[in-house]
Length: 583
Image (cartoon, rainbow, N blue to C red; front, side, top):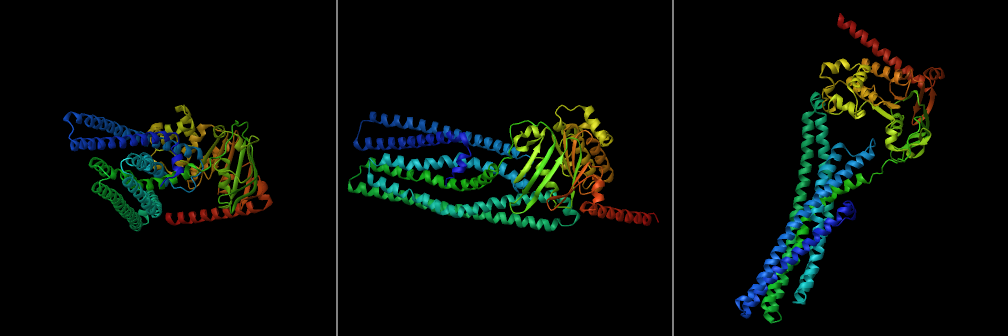
């Protein structure tokens, strides 16, 4: 019913919850004042008071009505303010957390899941904080205050009414155990369906090509049906619990009213006092009844809140306060594991000088990309040291480190904006001359000139560019950034030979003045490297220049020769096919 972690989540906004509860109490007291005024007037009528005497209960009723109105309006405004502030603060904290995590993943949370948690999840929490939480505290206070008011009139009736009140939270607790499971499944099905929908939309082209859209349609229908069923279970549970709470509330009020009638008949209660207790009896149960109605909304919000808390509780990458003094990168005896069970890197040591081209190669799964993740600060090793300019990476500031390093990979993101805007991300005040110079280097100037110039808009996921053009544009953007260290992680993967040659030519030229780190599955690309690290099963097995490694006739030489033979075979097949076509 009440979660301390979710309460901590709102921070300084707790004061608005307190103000709201106090205003709700004031509104309840105003209601009691109106009821008391009616009973007071009835008492005057029974006792035969002069008509002028009725002015006192009338004034009391008018004042109570005004107070009730002001309290209701202010409570509504405070709830709205509380909801808006909580949403604003949570969105800022969620966004800041994602920024702090930076290049790190969100522990397996999908893009659709992350979007739903940060948008829909926070909307659900709005209702939890603005509606459920104030009602929870008010529901705890209201029966006790009413008991204190009514006990002076008749302790028997007051005691019966107070004793029946806990039956509502008991019924809520009984339902909550089942409700938690249902809402956890509900949110899980909701995010799962969102994942499946996003996945289907992104892969729609492939689904059409393979004629698998009908099968995917059935799968989406099945996912939607599962969500419909869990939604129906939630509604059934809500209706059942509402019915139970109504029976408890009206049954308790009925028991109190019955005792009032007995008291009136036996003479221990005056008519006016009996009328007051009858009118107030239902007030004992209404706050908790309203809490029960808000409970289901709260459970949904709490389920979303748990996911937000899990995101916010992810450990931030450790950064220090020092500035980067040099750009020489070094890994010393680094061991890293993703799950704590299998070491992806084992006592790995590498050195990347301030100038020159260093390559990391090896078969798929050997740990190349993990090294990249560590170099760009995405992961921190379980043991060993990652140093920059002789300082441990965790001792320098993130801003200082990233001001010196850039990363270009096979899936470097190009934003759905103009070419100029993408360049401005790398350098805020970039000039047109700098843009054209960078485009010339990657042989894209002609294409951009013919298609709208720097104001050409790149569509979502760069769909209006070829794979090679996208990679070359990513390289051009990073050239403008003018960093000291460039990391190329499979930057020439799945692109045409011309684009690959252009990119590799630029990489080699950059290495004359900057530190360039290249990860490539195609060993022909790393032949010009000054130093090559050959990895197997998370360990550096060999390192040296291409000539040195070939002379050693080790694992690198075997892999290089195998690739060379395979490429020669592809060329022979291509020549044969070309001859057949010409014939």
